[in-house]
Length: 217
Length: 221
Image (tube, rainbow over all chains, first blue to last red; front, side, top):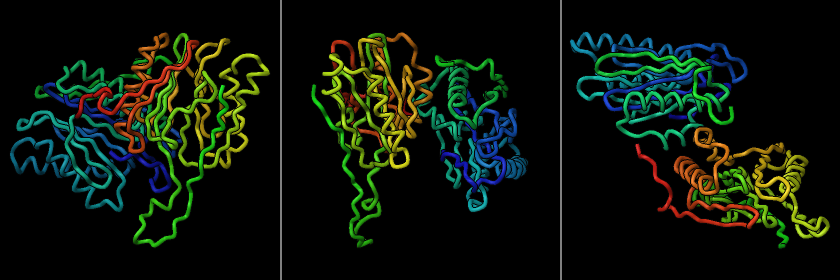
């Protein structure tokens, strides 16, 4: 996912951020930090939730301009619930991702928002999709995004293994977010994590003081 | 002890622009992204770099046993006259790592407007043992137990924070450096090739090269 650019082209409050989604054996973990900042100098919110539920078993993480991301997600939720009624069944994860992709691609000149979509559906099980800034859509096993993500590419590449257990994956996601928040000044606060499986959805919030500490802290 | 004036050639020639025939990038100054890393252990330091650096040699020996890794985003003429032999003869012992680091810092700070260079100085001396000093762009000087630099370094901060522990021995330091550099080379377009490692201790300098196919592999996803 493209690195978020914090220059004057970004309007207003932006989510310099770290977001992450990873598939484990039987489900998917999606998570983010909770800081919203203006220009990298002022933290306008310490506790915003960047993990948004768009349907029962489908969640999105947003990065980029907060205003753009919220507007897109609002429109996407509407499209998705309408689609779900028409199909008379819960939407597939790729449907949610495609709706976001469509909005991002068709309005690419005005928008500056990217998304991670993660969820579970009956047809394909746990999935993670990335919709980048310009509207590209790809499916991945594990993905990171936001400005803080550059610092954890090495960690994620080294640590992620396919078919982890839920606990291993949660620990991996918490560690990765903690490391990114430790190095990126526009990521911070608490770690919001959501675990999505066939059985349901579980929210985990790790407050700042309970985040894993590493040798230099 | 060999004196080695370290001079970086100036690559910014203007090629006459038959614009369609010559691609844009040939007209730009060579910018050398890279990844470098240095780690202290009890008794010495391990220093490593990828092989996509200016001179292709990566680690430039300064005076034994102090080694220097250069990373920079734009190549500018840098003439660092190494004090080497004269200084050593006066002191009657090898120079301190801190002295070498301070000399780099002095040049980088004084010419901060003209230069764009970041430097890691690592070595061993009798007084303080293994030391790593970081002189980033701008000319600050700080000693750190482990430090990374270069364009590829951003990708491995998290890995380094998670995996470095104080009190590692030489082999562990070599492993963590090789692993970190491989990860960075995987992600950074400006880093790559082979991993060059050197360990510096009282006994001297031991160099290792890890070829592309021998690099540690990580789960591909």
